[in-house]
Length: 448
Image (spheres, rainbow, N blue to C red):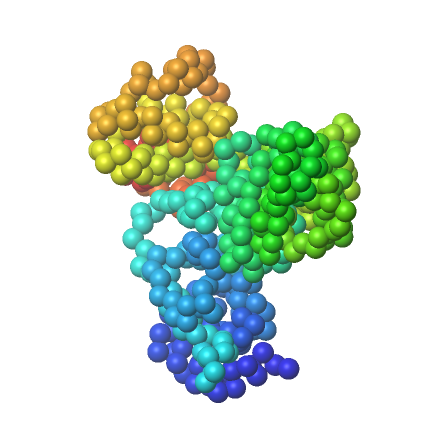
């Protein structure tokens, strides 16, 4: 059966004619299974996908929205009209669009499909200027990280188990929640537990539940998190810290889709998706005998690595200003002003607590220096002490692009930033200057 069969009353010729009323916009239609049945020429120009590549496939294949909170929403709400959305085109380039979508239903109210228009917004950014993009509350301007996040849409919709690896404070649970919201289980519960904070007995009881008298203190029956997450997603944070006994119980659930409460004699069926996270290498834990290899393979059907903040130095000034302004609104005070000296310290700081540490620091600075200029002496001790040690800097060449570094001009900086699509690491390397120096120059010439 052709994907067009669900929308027999909508002639492709009429759709093509309708799309020509706004030829610069992406116009497409989907059937009841959200397969694309029409793809306009404007959609090909805006998003880079040809008609033959898209028609017959699920709309998430080509419609890679970074800022949609719960997917499209057209089936649930019937009509969607949203401004300021960010979509990635075929090459991973962000496109700012305004979205309008309308569901098509039969006389009984059954969903037959829908029509959607993505209108490009006028961009007025300066050459080389980058901005934070939002992916379900995860903020970054790092293109590589954005590309990987966008690819999560396909894995999220598939329902397979996923393993997220990242340091503390990088946003592992935030990503897990985003995966849940992009999946068909979005309306069901999302339940999270930190496996590294409980003993073997209490962890097993929390996960699987127990019968009265199963152990000392079990004075009544208790349902576990598997029951609480039924139909939805169970997020196992720090899964590498699970005791081996609990790992064996988890493996049985993944293999048989059944579990047993502590002290019970009967099995219970379960229909959940498991997302797991760890800050350590599970392969190393397997080698050391602390983690089961068979469980590792069951959990990491799709692995995902969240890079630490120190590897996304271009995000630091952007995130700092974003969270500083957010903290100012939270406390109803004027935002503090960040000097170049302080910003260089922030960029070169290793951020062991990652984004969580940056958020905490922004709130600290706001409540201690509201509306005032932030100086090095105003920062917590770890920043002042770190600044006394020489920071590793990029070796600066005597010349850049054939000119002495001292003669770097605004036009030259704009040109290099444009050539590397705003990537500060590549721009600094091309110019032979440190990222901190690059940031100062950009601020000096209004290129941030």
